[in-house]
Image 1 (tube, one colour):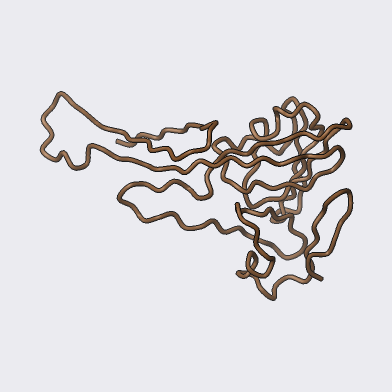
Image 2: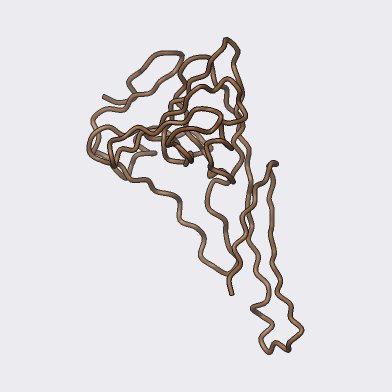
Length: 189
């Protein structure tokens, strides 16, 4: 039998979840009655400014629904994500309309904030998928890129230069643009 448990943590710390199976029937093999998973939950806070913001998730959120990630920020008017595989834009607008139902690490997102006041967004999640006791450590995530334009996110809790972060596709790209304070800038190209 398999038990799948999904939960969210609103705090940053190391969490160990343990499941133990018991039965009124005799069990001749007691070694497989307990399993544990350890999660290192981290929170990171970012500031969204009025107007357009280019944003990505540096963590794997406990709940990746768009409503969960940005729905609590009342000034968010739109969120756009670009699916480079299909060449289509996905979008979300409050309270819960649009085609962008989930926000995942590895993607970049355009978030439009109305009003004139900066708003903070806190992302709580894990850097890697959980480590399950007795199994191999999780492999760091990889993301697909496609010919043409891609809207990539930065998936890391520490700063990295582009040629280290994009080492897996070295020589395969010609331009990288960033966006800050209402203007594009060349990272490479």
